[in-house]
Image (cartoon, rainbow over all chains, first blue to last red; front, side):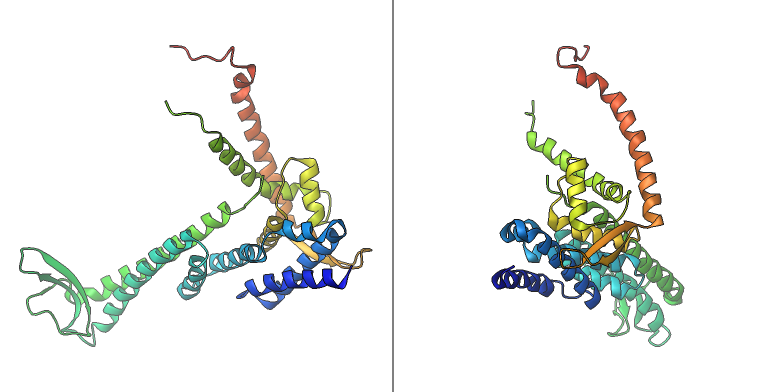
Length: 197
Length: 127
């Protein structure tokens, strides 16, 4: 094999390597070594064809990265790790973006409910769930975390019950959001086996 | 009346092939270990599944992450090592289950589809 061919192979593999950011070093080495071995096997029949058959280095790396982050999310039970994986998934596909939006909403509401329950003993007068009339006959429901004063015309809905209810609802939202995110990840992983015919 | 769309048949075929790919790779590895290029050649020669080369490697990596295959590097006469894949016990179990399901499903579909193969002359809808 000529020096020029070797340089072209390494240039292709460097592009793949750059696009595999975020994966473990050992996994990246295995992937690059395997692709090099594949190209070397096919190069005698034509290096151009060998490289073209693998597709663009960025797209090839994207398949590995997506699988890797979805696999990590699937075995994770930590909301932070799941959100981290979802952020990366969202940067790769529209499906990931919508799952991320839904998950952020669920985790935010869950965290707010738990926080409200935990802050109630320290800021009993301005932490809780209020119903606030808007003057036009309608009313607005507001969850206050003790950061601002209690609404003057508002009526507190739950009182001290916000503690058990906030904890229960908050934990349930976090668990349901985690299950929702993991379910979406599993469905997406099962559906994404591309094949060219 | 809506016209027949050939593209929708093509899309259906792609989905059908997608669903078979995992089983096809497990079946290709049934007789022993193979490296990536051999798996591609086995799929092409033993079935009409033509898988893009840029697809099979990430897929093998995924099957490995799922514990269905294992891999090892083996030195070759070509002067560079090759990564060989072999089925794990879990992969064999999965392959057997999928093959049994496939056999049942294809047999029942064949019975259902038998009248369609007899030609347009005989196919009619009674009114």
